[in-house]
Length: 273
Length: 223
Image (cartoon, rainbow over all chains, first blue to last red; front, side):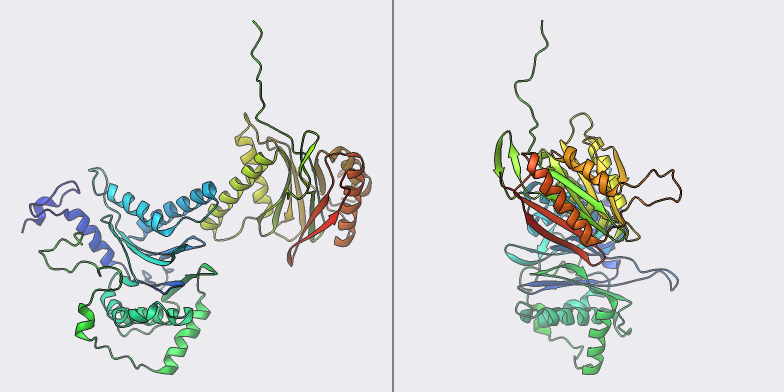
């Protein structure tokens, strides 16, 4: 009821203690095409759905290599995502130059989060309209983080963002307990299956999705279309066995590391987790 | 009132020699592995050669601390280039970058005497030679460092093409085969280490060709 009065700029609180501009920025993430991430003990896989404006145009690039050991998938305003990727690449290069070792992922996501927070507290700025799934390796193993426009970040075993991501999340919730010990190839298969869930009936082809992998002994790289198509073909042979019905109690359990992101009821501020 | 003189110098010379020879489809870059200071030897096994890109290798003699800093700068800039262009830098591109990087510190130079060698975009060998502040030139062969005064005249005798004004036009790159060029490099270093006290111990020879980058070593006089 009060939304319209208190949403003009990011430095205005609502009476309920919310910053609507930040929440609107998170809406932008939900409008973007889906991106998913999942991790095992040794590998992290990122996947995304490639949306193109028309048949004549090329697909938007949504997965970026940040360094040999870090990659990022974005959903939302891809222009904001590009700018943040450039920032992340710079940070990695500078850290490596000074310390002759790779930037730990945990440090990078904190820097990213602090950068996003600045935009929520300046009247002449606006929040970044992009959610980032940061996949990386460091001395403590494989990690997957989600960075919000609000400046919050969470670590996940598996997560999905963007439009129709709930379908992928449901699939991942059913399977996440197996991911830690999954092999690299099984992890990739699960990622492609999760992507398929977001397509909701549309045929899965390697031209509309992108998959990237990073792991111990395997620098971050995007899989080429041929390889992805081969894996998709093996699914078709195995035939659709997965029932789309999700078990109700599985949906209620919280995922391994953190919450699954805010629900859409009016009372709870989504950033307040 | 006499002008105050510095009682220390930010620079030191760690000695050593570098050579590069360009061929029709290969490039040989070599440097000795001795690192000295004054009349002392710091180590007999220091590499002066650095791979900057897939087809681009640099050898530098002079003050090795500045050389190391220069190599790190170029490596970081190369990473940025790869992120932006989705490909490796070509040798001529790296050559220009090196020149700009050196001139950037025109008023507190990198005490680094460089030769850049590799394959250009067509797969032909190329060598670029520099001074400490970035003046550079594409040549068929070059040598830098403490032994360069001994090495260059010999390379001129073996490789120097007649004037480019003379017809028919002759290429700067040598007609020598890869194996012959490597042999020439070994001969040249063996001679230089006889008379130059800062050159010796071992040569590190890097060969860049279509199949990739190869490295070999040869022992030299230890005195």
